[in-house]
Image 1: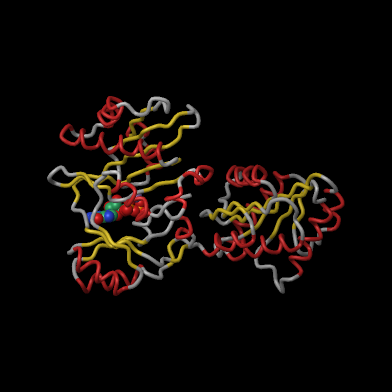
Image 2: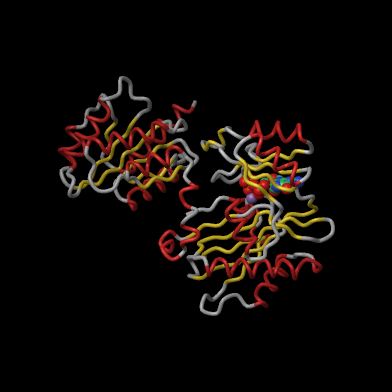
Length: 381
Ligand code: GDP
Ligand code: MN
């Protein structure tokens, strides 16, 4: 479960991490009222679950009442990478001279949490990791002992954080590790941790992901959950009972079983395509479930082609094939090409049944994915 920026900042602030003065607002009037209260300049920030909001136009500064009105009007109601912006955080704008990155996440390779610090904050840290891996200092933590103060100081020092800031940054990092541990977080991140001209540090952004399997013992955080549903598609997926994650590409993916869907995602990537979603329709693939799944992927306007990867088990391949036919026959015109790969029980029978006026049938997963990626490229042109 991912908290919103405003929620994560509340958690961070309660733990003693400096955050800007801020108010949540959902109308232009509320933004102006908050801005007048806080004092100009303010930053107005879209509260949706996407990274890179700044670049995408979801964060703007306002120096006056008129500007606050104007940016509130621009950001509220906008579509940010497929998310409808219903709320913004109005914040005291920070006048910064530097942007740092600090975070704690799980290093699955090492089987340990890792603390990371970089002086190249403010930009996408994955890009930094790729282009300039040495710019991120790392320190693994033994969860049995927690983060020792010397470890926090070491990683801050290794990152090249200026001496006069080192103590404060190390203390923020230690608090973050404590939160990671106490709150069953899978990830906590501040990017950027802004540095002001008089060497104050402020968490200008906040990311906190909580391990879903631990939510039962994190009641306070679990209670924040319903507020985080705002992608229409994710809401729909909840209604249909699907596991769905929206991604940024244009290849729609439907499968039964999480592993199968993950494999399909990897293959789409391998063949040069970009997955538009993760969609696991779970056990069974009766016409109604298939129709609902198609409704989901076709509702995503980024989708240019769809691949079905179905493994027949208890639900046999011929039943799945009927489901796909029935679902597609409901369309006057099928919006985008659909490719199907069937394996498992009665797969051959299923392939026979599939109506190839409606879908492209491929025997192997590799062929199906390659074909879908080709379609998506043609459609995208
Ligand atoms: P993200 O793009 O979704 O990660 O949103 P962030 O909260 O990290 O903001 C992105 C960028 O917007 C920051 O790196 C800053 O450059 C800018 N920004 C955000 N808040 C402020 C602020 O209070 N003052 C100023 N001057 N810039 C800000
Ligand atoms: Mn950020």
